[in-house]
Image (tube, rainbow over all chains, first blue to last red):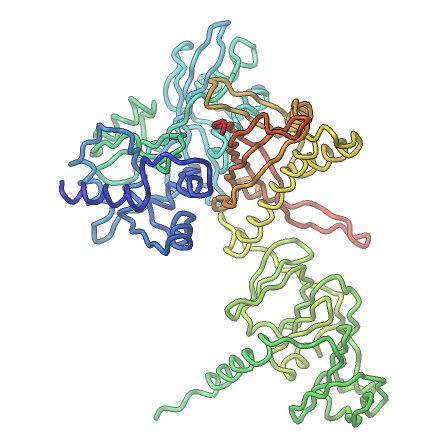
Length: 269
Length: 346
């Protein structure tokens, strides 16, 4: 506990959490601007913007521990400190510490979309993950599962629809392109019973209209014993951008349950 | 004491020569290297069947000639045939030329020598490549300055070169991520394109700007994008609803802003992620930037000011360009969808 308090304090000083800032380079340098940058900081990658910035401006070196701590949403008073401390032990202090990879399969983007269905305002959720195409040496986002309760749809999606690997940077604005021409994508949306096919068909029939992406969160499940959720916190503080909002200890069974209940996935792909 | 193997000694010698030659500048003047290892500087007047004649210098017998390089980049090398020597004329002076020990000739738009590596942007395909300095026999820059490791090696290599305008082009390795040099190059191109977009936005929002000038800015701005269907999504912390514009609509929206002029100041820092290859063969990246937007009234007073955050998708893709009647494939960065967030009024 003492260790954790000390670390949090250190991170507060060196990475300046919760310090209100006016617009300047520093605030932007601290911001975790993309999920790619989140992964870089989590892994303490050699050349990261924040490390270069702190080195150039303050001749300051930061450790992986400090970087990982700075990735937690510091505005949340409800953190279970023992859990966070155990997480740091597992992530930072192991002999062979774990790292995240953008190319991993076990992290998911949960995209809550807003639409209008038969003149009623509705929400539906798409869950996307990284699809590696070893044959083409390529990577894309693909749709894994979805839920649209107003149409009675929920579950795994078997679809060939792919989005560019940078789609997350604009909160999957690419979906606007797809849903603007649903008939062009129905051929790639699996068979007629596929939930995404039904969704697109409803859009093609003009029963359902996509309005906007309302919220995006990322769910990282590739670390042993842990699940954590990353959300965007947009505020004029140093502790801003894509940060850990939830941390759950989870074994295999808990992970399967989480996949089903939170991400509508019955089988991990 | 164990003796170094001959190959190792040769390698060490070449590395030493690299330090002496490759990283030192050859001035743009005529120069002749001889078999005795001399470097004779002086204007080459003419070459006859037996000698190289230089202004105010002793003639050099062709049997002593290793290589001659003129200030314009033309190269003189001896041959075993009757002609005794031949010129390799440096015709395409708009490009730097890299001649490798394997007698490849690369036309390069940009050459950097760092840590015994020669990084260049291939003129033919626009991609970045890196050569080990030991692979390079001679570099002729477009201003006539040259660099080489060893005149004898350069000569041997050039003996196999037909001319200096038949270029080789290496195919980039197909991998999910670009090489660090390519990542660096295309990141800088992406930043330049976002800055160009910002400039056009400033022109469009300047009420005093000429209408034709603004029309031209619209055309130029659209040309920065991968296609005209790209979207700009504008969100605000003060509103739940996003607004979507096609790129031409967005440009016209900016044109209609009720300011006498606007000022867009850039944050010094931009974050660009690792650019990755997608199944369509193109590479996709993401640049995050922050700007201050200021709108002025007729009296040049700031009437609106906010921080604008932008995430711009970029696509690195090939495009075809006609050069000298030949269609050549080059790679460049194009802008794609943009997320704009007006965060807070200052």
